[in-house]
Length: 152
Ligand code: MN
Image 1 (cartoon, rainbow, N blue to C red):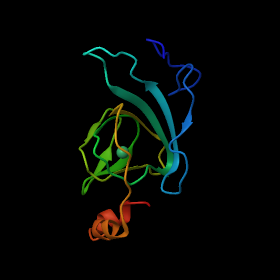
Image 2: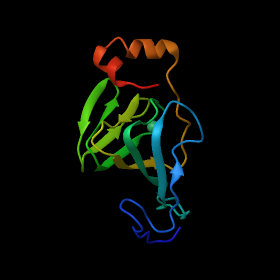
Image 3: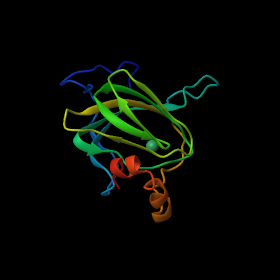
Image 4: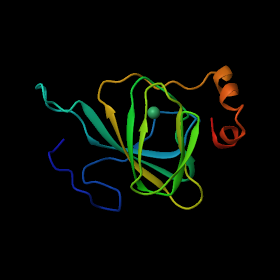
């Protein structure tokens, strides 16, 4: 990966960066694409051990309801949208910054307004996301606002 990744071709696209599927397969997400803008290349003590991705969720779409040990740092570039972090729902606008702590349920959803686009920073080495068990899902759905929001 080059030291400079130029945007281009279309809004929220970058030269030489393929638009990938969000995840390999599944019905637990809808209308999400992924572009990888940075991957670690250095090996020294100061190497940046992170991956920077840009995700885009089309109107009516959503990311997976999941949690994992690694954290996320999210910067919203296109909105508005909504997200769940832990047991709280947030309205998101462009330029908002969201921290998803370790082992915390999270999901991003769009309404009909337009796509949600966000940069997401993660550790390069990280654990796999885990989806809720039926029991965990029941517990989340005890809160009516969460029950109305979540998509699985
Ligand atoms: Mn996640």
